[in-house]
Length: 389
Image 1 (cartoon, rainbow, N blue to C red):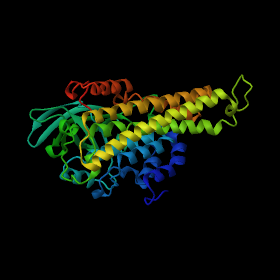
Image 2 (cartoon, rainbow, N blue to C red):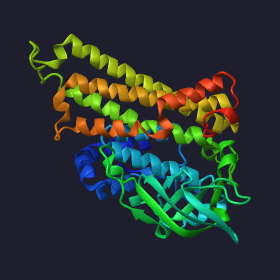
Image 3 (tube, rainbow, N blue to C red):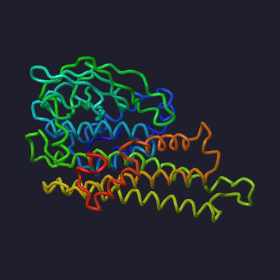
Image 4 (spheres, rainbow, N blue to C red):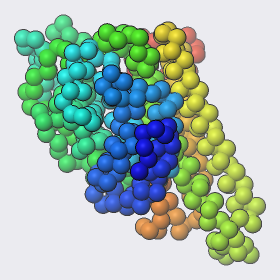
């Protein structure tokens, strides 16, 4: 197994054979196999976005995206769980120091899942709130010790994110889907759970870059809130598209095109054009992801806030990257033919996983283009279609 002296991307690359071999088991189990989880732990990949103060790597957004794309080439579910857990580890670094110490002191390899929608009822009580609710699509919840959950406004408290121990929640088995089956994105249920004020992070200030952490010298935790949480969803999709393209290219010298004179796909001009188109679409996705990551990382390094237009552009970059990667996947599958959908084919799994992930509400291309268009036209943030910019 890869040692932690290698870069995170190199460590991720070393796991691809294992992840590809276990990918069918992901679907069967509807969760990550424990061998995958242990491999990610051993490689230190569940610490990429955790604070150095607690043994984490405190990497950049670009690193997170590069690692998730590398993992996504082999297994979309594993890449997705890696990304979502690390995004929640990043959010943990936005809370106050007391809360961070509580979370990271609770487990030597703490992992955090999350659902940010305020799908709960809340009531004020001494020193905090009590929450009751159901939060769906909690990717990685079967492998986590804590959860970040959206909480609606109550009394003088704004809409918040609450850090809650998993042993105070119930997991309801609801994740029965066609794609991304291995993410185990089940529903979390809370019944009158107490959350102290120190474990609440106000969302409106966070959108404006105002966090609770006292460690303002830590560059990673100055990253822009919504742009960071949006663009990280694109990395696994980029990887899945790359993985599909590589598989088809590897086989093109041996596979014929049925009902044609071509004994090898690689000799067909039509096939060559489709492969080139898919490769360029993947490059387009990668370039938009890189620009968004650079915007976020550069602003964090400088300690400045991304302005409204730049944040809107990251949302647009996210949607465009996802659309391009998904279109590349569709082009590759079409070029390869109907055999791509054999149950024994890794291509059909990558296609199902990408098709499911590309429908996440935060990455929807049309929605993201609309909010970017409004920003370009000078429509104020308060009048846009969502505050999540």
